[in-house]
Length: 247
Image (cartoon, rainbow, N blue to C red; front, side, top):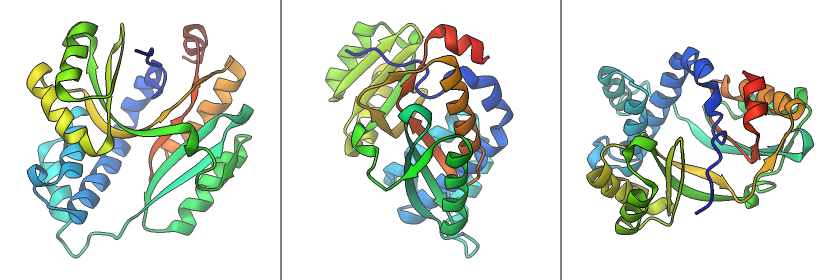
């Protein structure tokens, strides 16, 4: 049972993330609309939409905003978004995957490329770094959900593939196509999860020093502030001391 990197999703920047709540709502609304448009507008019949709604509820998105995003999928004003993935390297060869949803591919590609260039990185071809990641479903729970043994037993019963636990929480991994099923099984055993989503999980991580972390965080900030970018994944880690210095 490998140790989960507590900085994997830049969790130490919760204060900054709170300031970007409206932007987060906008991105989640876009995912809800696209998921509903691609499948059934009923979350119970659409696994992707169900996960998107769960993610929205996890950050306290108002129900009327969620409902409006779903209804938008059936309206004539719903934009046609293209899902696209960009792969590249930050400073010191750190692998970064950017998932975007856009109605203007030229704009998004130009913006993402400029962010990498400004921060000392470079954008690569599709597949240039994703081979170092596994595409999996991830379900997260707070430490208060139970002991590591309790979560492991629930994972075995639910058919999950792996569990990582530390003092901050529990992360359960499963096959992408089984995420909705495994998530539902966990809810019955441990209650509602903090989050359920499909991710790129790095096969290995590289610990970075303060200078490298600062440069990488600048790049990630720029990417995450772009309205077209839905998620940013990387394979670097940092010590508690470095994270504390970042603030």
